[in-house]
Image (cartoon, rainbow, N blue to C red; front, top):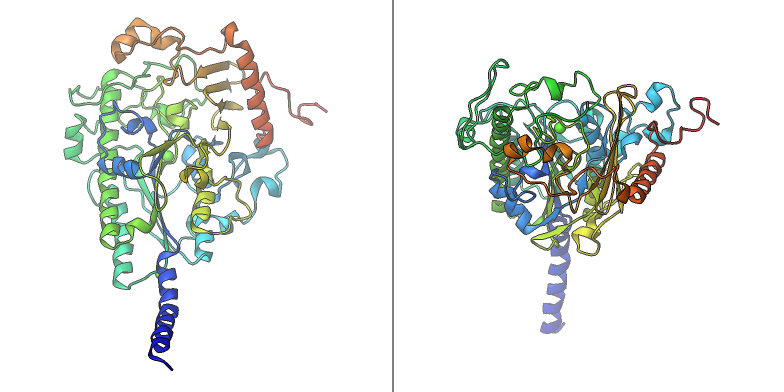
Amino acid sequence: MTLLFKKFACIVVLFIIALPTCTLANERPNLLFIIVDDQSPFDLKIYNPESKLDTPVIDKIAREGMVFDRAYHMGAWSGAVCTASRHMVMSGRTVWHLPRNRRRNGKGPVTERLTAPELANTSMAAVFNRAGYDTVRTCKKGNSFEAANAKFKIRNDSTKRGGTDESGSAWHAEQVLQYLNQRETTKDTDPFLIYFGFSHPHDTRDGKSELLNKYGAVNHKDSLSLPPAHPSQPELPSNYLPAHPFHHGHPGLRDEVNVSGVWENRDERTIRNEIGREFACSENIDTQIGRVLSKLEAMGELDNTFIFYTSDHGMAIGRHGLQGKQNLYEHTWRVPMIVKGPGIEAGKRSQGNIYLLDVLATMCDLTGTKFPSTNEGRSFKPVLEGQQEVVREVLFGVYCGGTKPGMRSVRKGDWKLIKYDVLDGEVRETQLFNLKDNPEEFIEQHHRPEVRQLTGQSPVEGQLNLADDPKFAEKRKEMEALLYQEMVRLDDPYRLWDQKPIQGKDGVK
Ligand SMILES: [Ca+2]
Ligand SMILES: [Ca+2]
């Protein structure tokens, strides 16, 4: 054998030996899915530059990744919007195709197509367990898809809404760091899926004292007095109202009447203090995410990790005179969504037209994992790669947790329709917004002098609910038809007062 050939053979052998370790370590990316509880996208500077909330870590993820301007959750059949939302995240199924949906008030047929029995076996952690991932989870307890959560190999859940490191968000970060430390010690090279959930800024919003001070807020506990005003508090939201013009349709709803610190108050002092508390909790979350990202960087794993940042749904806290998550205005129907990872161009924004239920398909697509058969979500990898702007044209929303049929919304392009059919016909309302011209969804009440004085906003002519404006009658008709189509397509078990009744129901053939 010539020397040259010996050298060549040696290189080939070395290459063959080296190859499997290289591919195992680097080929499949890690997944870090960060989900906070109850956060409006408009709390964050990346969605609302006027916000006082400081989130340097989230801002950096946004600068290095892609921000989605049209990310939504599909809605809920319960006042606990979290529960429906988290079912959709875990399973990639649409809102009326989840195990807990109450088909036609419990009277209608419950078919396999609607409920997908054994759904937990094809949920997020089960899918990635089979793909050879280490699956790790920390989150709040309850209001979730328990059978799916139980599939994570490592799971440390606890509801942490206190104002100390042990009782607050730092605890969730500790659970992730514990896994990463162990991974480092044992030189574990399996790819990981970490579900990094927080219990905040959901109430009770007991922030850390230094952050409460920063945002001029106190942990207000006395329902008979108002919290003190403070110049450091965040301003009232731009679409604040002292009251919503009609009832939301869910009498006694906890989030509207019984949240500690707010109760039924909607005055300026209460709302600004509560937003200050919320910001204190959200900034702490940002700090905790930073600790985990620093660790991943030190381990050399950050660049091979896809990071998702989102919330289970948005939140009102004074916007439109509402307090909770049980409405379909943009502040509550939409969620923040930022994704960073290998191959995603830095600093991009996209509309996306995505739902939280698309995350599972996207994770599968990004890691070369087969979609589960029960999945109904669409991968937004083509959007992340800059090949597409959106994954669908029409977006649909439901709130069906109070009196039935509840609220429905549909969006296409700049146009959005919301309908309310609640309290046994007492409230039957339609709103039509052009979100390009009226992104805050201002209604007539926002134009009143006493409201403008409080918010400092000056809505312009036409920034209104356009549903009854004859100029937009054709547009309304089109949006009403779209809503009806989406309700039929997605097996919505209800119809609104002015829609064709369901075949076979109420004597209709
Ligand atoms: Ca929630
Ligand atoms: Ca492992």
